[in-house]
Length: 130
Image (cartoon, rainbow, N blue to C red):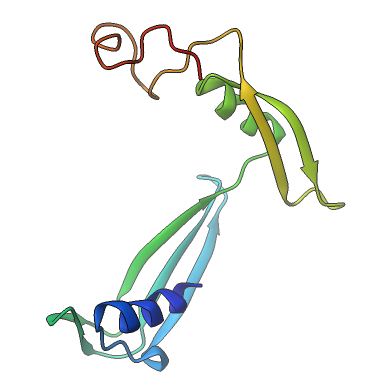
């Protein structure tokens, strides 16, 4: 996936990434509950993207993604914080992957995360439900 990003940049942005000169790096951070994904330069090099040069040192990493992992309770809490409720879970036999159907919670008004109070009505968030 990560190296495909470089391949697309080569194709779509006239970049000059040598795919063999980069590696995919990923690890799980159990405290944050996420996988962190990077691509790492295997040597000192300069790459051009849209005619602009970018220098990479050997071992330098570029962060491309956080992939958060949630248990059932975490998904339910996240849904509630956005004004939703879990309607149904579908999981694999090992319960490592899930698809979750959410519906608007009749108990809560959806608002931007971390915001409350004054100014939200003017921004269109008043009593509107999700």
